[in-house]
Image (cartoon, rainbow, N blue to C red):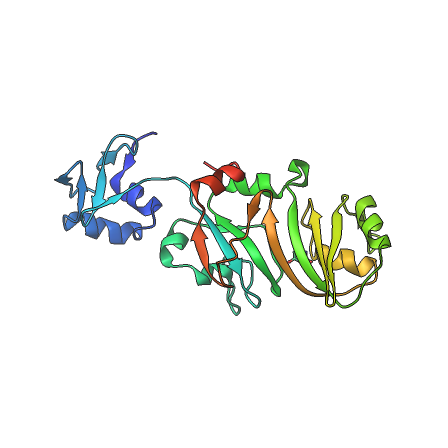
Length: 238
Ligand code: URA
């Protein structure tokens, strides 16, 4: 890895803002290879040098990947003047690392949301061309019939605007009516509009999976955690 300024190294790990870091470094709270370093512009190589902050080792990684169980009532956005966003649920550390949600869930949708600062990976997960399946569970107001399965398989025409890519639909309960659907794209209100096209309203919607990455059911709505190494590998993350 290429070398970088000490203040940048620490900022990328979400320790503090650049101006706060300059003060922290000048106060002697940061060591490089065991020696106090008071120069914020000192160059370190993340692959070689050992950096500590208040004697806690700081490991450098360029990207961060969070899994959130998005709660209902919160916007999938980085900021909003009036409404609470998913980033408001995170500590400053991650905002300093410039994370954003990879893909959008409606305000009233809950479930798996990946939050990262790796734009290329986010693009790869979301591009319909890459055909990464997203699995949703929907409670419906009524059973739209077996024909919905074929309709989803063939692609549903939505508001005579576009035909969706083929989607896999299965019903897992009848009282209440609960369906699971796997789609390969993420158009605005896509799942709700697909069910509407076959005559059913979505009462509640939850995303369970993106590709092989499954929502950790231990996470309560609003909770998040960093992905494990195994989970990172599942989505092709570094
Ligand atoms: N489809 C929808 O209709 N809403 C979502 O939040 C996600 C997919």
